Amino acid sequence: MLFDGPGEPLRLDTVPDPEAGPGELLIEVHACGVCRTDLHIVDGELDVPGTPLVIGHQIVGTVAGTDRRVGVPWLGWTDGECEYCRSGRENLCDRARFTGRDIDGGYAELTVADERYCFDVPPGYPDLQAAPLLCAGLIGHRALRMTGEASRLGLYGFGASAHIVCQVAVAQGRRVFAFTRAGDQASRELALSLGVEWAGDSMEPGPEPLDAAIIFAPAGELVPAALQATAKGGMVVCAGIHMSDIPSFPYDLLWGERTLRSVANLTRADGTDLLALAPTIPIETHVTPYPLARANEALDDLRAGRIQGAAVIDVRA
Image 1 (cartoon, rainbow, N blue to C red):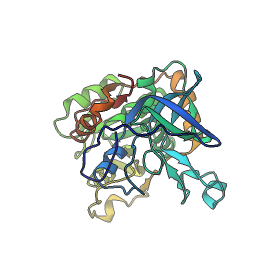
Image 2 (cartoon, helix red, strand yellow; image 1 turned 120 degrees about the horizontal axis):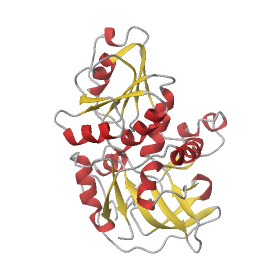
Image 3 (cartoon, rainbow, N blue to C red; image 1 turned 45 degrees about the vertical axis):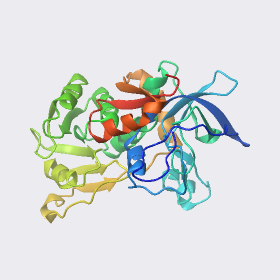
Image 4 (cartoon, helix red, strand yellow; image 1 turned 120 degrees about the vertical axis):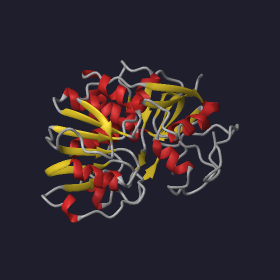
């Protein structure tokens, strides 16, 4: 499925098989999670270096000619030399290349990836259930770590990331509160089934002040709402790669030593840690599968908020 430019639907086409170079793996794609970042690319909110492009960066497949199953995440390459890479912050590398943006991704039968940036997939996870761990899970887990020891945790936007990180937080003994769009009863029911203590309207305060909040929805108006719901000394983490403009808000919402920060991309260490942790909880991913030819439908459903959990492209369907 090829992306030709913003506002245009992906088109199904046949292209020459990719070829792996030195240090790369040729991967037979089994599944690819549908991420909101894919929507940001398709909708023109994130620039891409060139088209046509194969999007998708939550890839599960087998290395061609073997039975080795690997996962390919958003981070596809870094220079290893800059100050960020040398200080353990490769996610901030200025020359980084990203799967499904700079490198053809997983909305295809075959893809090529740098072996150093691939992960071995835990054996207990079927392909479709493993795919959302590779971005929704990874960025959610990184954001959760940023909240430190926060006991009362609010999750804003209960989609792919939140439904995974919720399970981690509950397993850690945290109290979790889910904030969803007004009237989104289905997401609230999913949240409650996964162990959250309360689920309600994202534009209203919760039943008690939060120690930390993570915003997954790309809506800037949630920032002042989350700050208002957070106790003094608390933290609000913005976990998306793109967000609409944040409206002005009174300093009083930030005062009291509250912290507002973003999370950018992921490191390979994040991937290794989460994929080792997932089977021990165990994390259960709730997925809605779509065949490759219906990728546009999956994107439309995600845009409209019709997905509970995560959408996944089942390439072999």
